[in-house]
Length: 463
Ligand SMILES: Cc1cc2nc3c(=O)[nH]c(=O)nc-3n(C[C@H](O)[C@H](O)[C@H](O)COP(=O)(O)OP(=O)(O)OC[C@H]3O[C@@H](n4cnc5c(N)ncnc54)[C@H](O)[C@@H]3O)c2cc1C
Image (tube, rainbow, N blue to C red):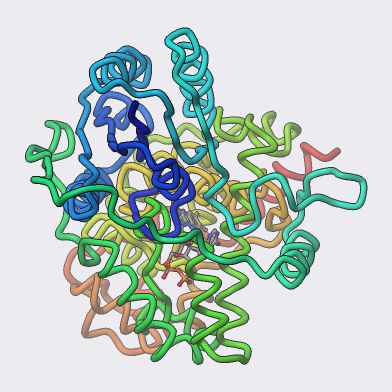
């Protein structure tokens, strides 16, 4: 009789409820990871993310082998194919209990229900655990037992839950057998071969080092530096968090133990709360993972035809330097600074008035930290269609944002080298005064006029 741990969005050994539970059973334990390239493509996974995930799954396989747990890579094109593959695997290895940590996208939920039904017929028990958030998903509710749809009251309740509960980590599993030869997966599936150089190092150990370094060196100044894209002021832990190499609990507990006190660390903990907030939104409002707006009335907005404006945005050729620099950072590294995610998303949805769903998909297709809950939440916030959304009349001016958050143009100089020689004022808007250098485009849209037009379209919706 074997216990099987199915790893999905939780590629770690430490603080893993499904793994801890399986190892407690005193039965032989195996693990599996299902490679589903067709499904990943359908879900807009980027090459950077697929590479990250497979490298981490290989590392996980090595670490599990040291504990006497064999991880098998199962290949199935889509979630629907993974059912039969999992069933066959359970029969081959005499599995009696399957353990996994929950995921909240609609297709993942449907898959898990089908797995539960199918395995019940084979007399295999299915055990699922709430892992993705600090407070188990669904527990942070209003006094009327309703989900929160505004962040600030959610985070207040989240913080008092933490004080009341003092969450701890799930105990690390001990070895269940002799060390084994680990199975590895070698090939990157065909659509994902063109990945950028990895942004962060591989492995759970590397993730913890990065967390410790951030807390020791940069967390104190996080509040002051987090909005400055030219400064290494944020943790860059998002690829690990998005793919479960680190858990939110681990981040919170480490921050409270070693990050000291003060506004820097408190502001950072607030970001972990944002992550939990958006995961809860995905859980309570499945429509957001079906390309639907959180605010249904905004479905009536008549977005512009994407045309060449969308291509210019994707390619970083809009003529707005901060937007173009950000889009180049995304394409080259698979990551983008949070302030720039807001600026580029607002520019696409408000100044170009292009549907947020197109931007959401493009981000997913490029981000190494692509994470449905946060990406959808961030896009709908920027487009004023979501929870807690930026009010439709508060439209960032990307040039003003650039002057404020990249005052010396250092970030722009790094990513748009043809503008490097412009002075600190002109670099934010080279179309103002003088010749534009090196074939750099003129702005593809008038910022003031397009802002007015966007506000009018939202206003019309309201009227
Ligand atoms: C349009 C848009 C799209 C986004 N897409 C994603 C995405 O696909 N995946 C993703 O992980 N984040 C996304 N974010 C949120 C945020 O930009 C990134 O989490 C952050 O930039 C990651 O960098 P970091 O690890 O250095 O963050 P830090 O500032 O060090 O924050 C620590 C962690 O908190 C979480 N976090 C921080 N900010 C947010 C936020 N606003 N919402 C939710 N969680 C947050 C992340 O897990 C992050 O790693 C998006 C934001 C916007 C505006």
